[in-house]
Image (tube, rainbow, N blue to C red; front, side):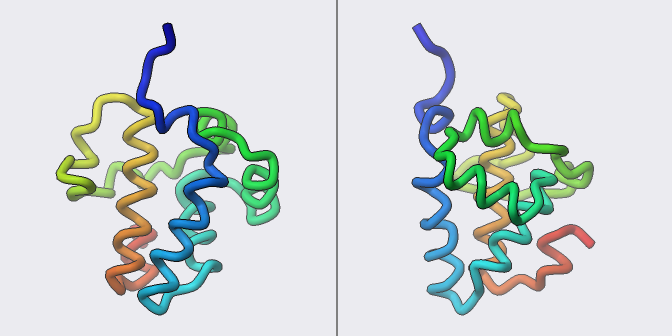
Length: 117
C-alpha cells in the first residue's frame, strides 16, 4: 500500500499550466511563475522545462530539485484553509509553499516580496 497524498503521484506537468493560467488571468506572466518555481526549487529555467517535458510527478519534482530555497521558512499564511508553515509532511509543505507563492503572484504582490527579498 502506498502512503502519502494522491497529489504526490500527480504529474507536475498537469498542474504547471494551471499555475500559469491563474497568474495570467490576473495580468502576470509565465516568466514570473517560472521565476517563482526556480527560486523555490533551485531549478534553472531549462531544468524546469525538462521536468515538465518528462512529466515527473510532484514527488520526483521536489526530490530532484537542486536546492529548496533556504528562505522558505519565511513563507507563511493559508492555502486551502491550511497554514503552510504548519504542514507536517515535507513534500506536502513544499507543494503548499508553491501554491502560496503562485497565489501571492496572482494577488498582485511584488516579486521582491514573493521571493522574500
